[in-house]
Image (cartoon, rainbow, N blue to C red; front, side, top):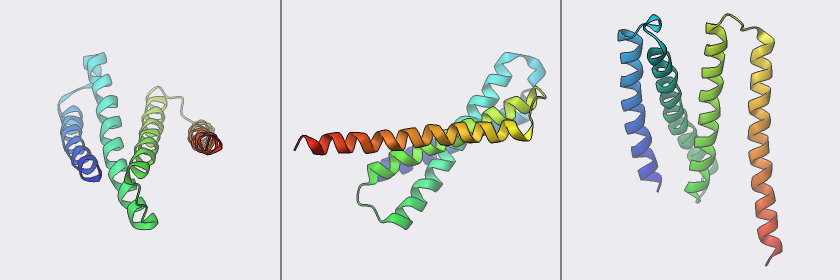
Length: 132
């Protein structure tokens, strides 16, 4: 499972990195909605793959957890939240509405979302242990 995840994320990072580079070099945002959507989607997927790999490797080294799938799940979720944060910040900046408190509110909302996922995980563990 760990090797498959690593291979998929490396392949995804290379593929989406090439698409992102092509988008930056060849497409102009003035060309229409396709160029803008391609930019944001390729950026999101590139950042997600890279952050997943880095986060998963760091978790493996720090925790030495035998349950690799638990690290994979958390790493991917947090990488996706980071990519969403970057994309939303860039989008708000592109329409000239970005201020420091927008960044703070966006970060706090994504942190609260992550805390919700973490607390939900604890509830399901507690509920499953009560049935034994």
